[in-house]
Image (cartoon, rainbow, N blue to C red; front, top):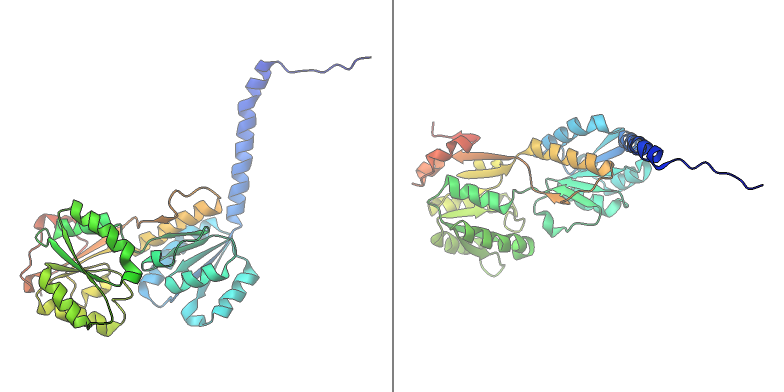
Length: 322
C-alpha cells in the first residue's frame, strides 16, 4: 500500500517563515550574549603608576565590566617578570587580552595564542606591525586632524619643522607630506643620524622653520636630557613647539593636541565588546575618537608668536601668564 505524505501548502510555509527566522535570530543573539557575559579579559598594563595608563585602564574597566564574566589585572612594572605573565595566560586562558603601552603589547602578542589582542597607548604602533588577531586604538590622532588643528590655531606658522628617526617614523612622515601640502603648509624635515650632534641638526632645522612639530618618535625622544635640549634650543631660536602630549607643557610646549585618554579607554572597550560578540571590525586600528587641546598663550607671547583668537572656543586648556 503506497505511503502518503502531508505537504503543507506554500502559504502556510510563508506565514511560518518569519516566526522561524525570528526564533533563530533570538537564539543566536542569546547565545552570543551568554558567550560575551562569560568571557574572561586580561588587562596587561605596562606601568599602572603612569597616570595616562591608569586613566585608560579605569575607563576601559568601567565600560567593559558589565559585559564580561571576569576581568583580570596584571601590572608589568610591579610584577617585573614576563614569565609571570606567561604563566597567567596559560593558567587563565583569557578570551581577550587588552594591552596598555608598548611593552605590554609586545609581550601579549608573543605570549598569547590565537585569541584577540587589543592595544592602546602604544607610541607609533606601526613599528610593531599588526597581526591577524591584533586590534587597537592608535595613540596619535590622524595626521589630517593634527595638521588641520595646527593650521587653525596657529595660522601664521606655515613652515613646520620636524625631526625624526627614519626607522621609527618614515611612514608617518610620508603621509604628513601630502597632508601638509593640502593644507598650505611646508614640511621641513630633518632626519636623526649618528654622524652629527643633535644640537647641530636642530640648529639647522630651527633656522628654516616657523614652528617645531615634535612627534612621538622614540629615536628622537630618547631620554629626558634630549627632551630638555630640544626645548632649550627651540626657545633660543624663538620657535614655538607643537606636540602630542600635555606632559610637554611643563617643558614649554606652545600647543598640544592630544588624544583624550578616558575616551581612548572607552573606545577600546567598545572594540572589545565587538570582538567578544565575534562581529566584524572595519578598521583593526582605529583613530582616537576624542582630543584635548592645550594652548600656552603665555609661551607664545614670549616668543612673539600669534594665535587665532577665534580658535579659543576649541581649546580645552588655556595657559596665560600670571
